[in-house]
Length: 487
Length: 138
Image (cartoon, rainbow over all chains, first blue to last red):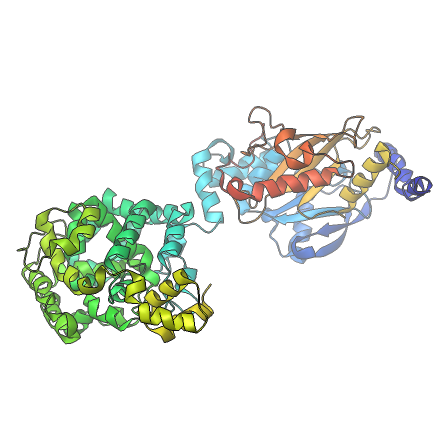
């Protein structure tokens, strides 16, 4: 039945084909039509019918195709019957028949020709070798030179990113509203940090002195730091802290332990993934410690670097953000820009702490800030006073303030993670204290009332409820919005 | 169900390749137009986008033995490529490491193989593997 059908279907192609192949063999001897008509299938299903003399070279064919395909001849790659057509061959030599189809692909300008030469078989063909020279010393023989161009092809060129002064992280991190949305949660940040591309591009960024220069230039606070800024950014430690997900993870953990209090949201707002705990309150502490303690240093830095998407959505964030203080200090040039409009540049987030060290006015105004916050005045002076005293020109200086306002018990978790000496702990007193009162209560206790309300409303998922409440800083309304819009 | 004889099958595939009826990303044709047995074939695979293979063109050779399509063709890369299923010695594709060759079915075609290879290039880690310079051959 179908056995009789299949041959019936098949013969038409079957019969002519052997004839075709024999005819093409014969055709070489016999005179035949000079003109052939075939279709060139370009990208996006763009079909270009073309009639050419069959003895023109492939290079000439490409010239003819340049206009209809709007691909310059040197970027065209023609493929027929599983072969890449070489420029110096004729159309005829590939036995293209009337009605057949040639694929046209757009390749990279110079490497394309290199490939054209080599892929076709004779790797040392003239066109291939000639143009490959422009990529480097013969694209085919030098892998290290080829690899960067591949990276560039996939949009990883750090320079091109930097051209926009938005080097890191990628734009989509900031959300559709340009960064004013909720901060990415630690898990998102973590997963981002774990992507090799992100790490690679951060590394590339930090290794490029030109980028660093430009970065420093573009940022008044870094400028004020002078050569120290550059030294710090170039240090191996800093780079590692910016790129190592495990350190970020550590910091996230620390933040969880630290940030349980009502101000946890504030920290989160200021620090993006909250890995940069309360820069405002701690004043310069994080950075100081960072410079002495690799773990603390790297963690805070990565929090700052990757937490750029976090706007101070929470009112507390402003309190805890040194920029809040900085804006109050008239002479400060950079304070105005940063606290309100969220800086796309992650380093700006990192800067508050640096700034705190570098600018005495900021340190002093900070004494006012927590005071205006009201609640945490008791604890604030310690940190603020330390900030006032401490104006080291070099961020790497050890920070050894008098240990006032220090509560070792409250800070124990944090200190373990930071691996901090008692000397350094003094500086932490400032921010340990305000967060402390509610710090140690588990979420079910702290949010008992809110959780009960959420449960009444039909939100039964405890983990999500707690997460939502944390995001909203304990506001049921905010938590509901998050739960309804959330993932 | 009738079995399509080898030559009919290959002629179909040849026509598909020459007329460009198949996938845009792959191309296929006889290595020697005069080969009545239609044993040796050339194929190209366009590197899948958003991978290190993007903008590259990979050439492969396919060999259809007398048992084709009852047994899969043997596939060998001409262009150098770093891919788990491809031998770094000679570019041969290890049939046990490519799903469609390992579990060959009679109605698979050479195009199936090329498309599968392309998908393999674009999958998971393979799209990030460092690749030898473009244009180098085995």
